[in-house]
Image (cartoon, rainbow, N blue to C red; front, side, top):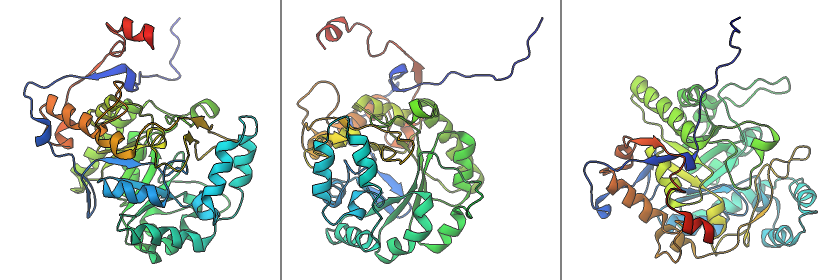
Length: 379
């Protein structure tokens, strides 16, 4: 007998399962333009440092801005809860693996201090850097006026999963068109993984969308909740939503692939899949200037009832400038990300990131192992 189908599954792909096909025309890498724009802000490199306490503090945000990129300060983290964030960060890095989850839950249970929210923003602004800040939807209404008054430049509303329609019995949810009217800052919203959710978010009038659920090195959402879509597939789907929205509105809303990056090749594949920029966490947590002191942890880790992250030891490898621009001292692609992006664009004959979106990609599960037996045996 024929059994009716209850669900139809489709194959999805992550960074290690695909490859970029070189173009028929090649371009000198130094002739490529890799600018990234969010409304009236233009960044010379399409790379954003994630809003995680082990990655971004005031000093890191300042340095990232000076190097041409953007770093997002988490306004619900240690920087806005404690006057002495360095001491708290040291406690986290020194805790044992057995004790660290309960310690994080305790540390993040302290209230957010509204005066610190303004002070941290003003500290970034005084350095001359572009100031981007991140808040979860639940606290956005309360903190958004403070953020605007302190004159932050870019406002990020970020949670594990974000949708344009949220159902709740307890409160009237965050309405993005109302937020857009309330504050004049560019608003980036995330995270999402589907064409339909991305399209609906763009139709609310926001300025950019973060793409990805659970791929981060310190995130365990996929294990705990079972939700998420591999990054290549979700980037392709959300890029389709971006292009559809552009066709219907004439407004281009960039998508930012967030999480799962280990090497320059992953970043290049994200752009070929349709990303306008990438958000990176664990790789930047390895920078000498990162506040995590060689450790990294997910922002869902301190959840009081259902932690969805883990503290990992990433080590300290090199200065941020070397990670971004080289010269590389390693051969595994974990340094000189900007050089990798420009070279990949040149190899594909793309003068810009948007032209890179048209590069051909193939399903290639053996791309990192084919002919590499000597490398694999020595790793």
